[in-house]
Image 1 (cartoon, one colour):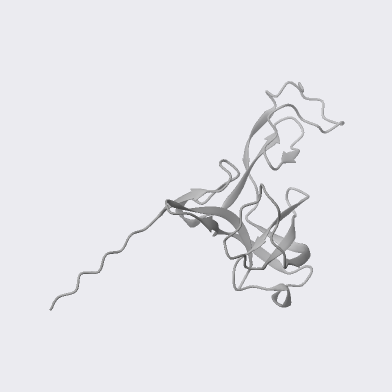
Image 2 (image 1 turned 60 degrees about the horizontal axis):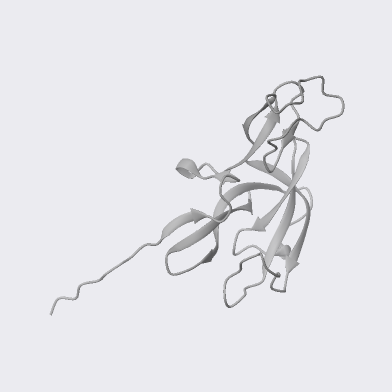
Length: 154
């Protein structure tokens, strides 16, 4: 007797369109940067440079697409033991997860994100190097909805 195994794969879609890319496994946050003064923004800033010292035009034309650093250092971290309220969408049943605030040295900013599954607060420490990866935030019958996540650098 021959058994036929049917496998189906769901589409993978970003949970928030345009906030990151995972092209060819290279996960990068997508923001903007002022072409006049270099100030980076995440999420994207489409209006005008908000740096009060900037001498650029301040009409939005100074803002260009910018892929932020893929590595940073843990600035702070915590675990999330409760299901966040809407509009946040979490798996059902809810699974606790760890979040990390990560300092990007080149951009001089801190970006918050979930830590990849399998890593807990016991695995993290302030100052440790982490890198971006892609993970599934939740799924439905049609697709897996993905977000950027941080994971310790090996």
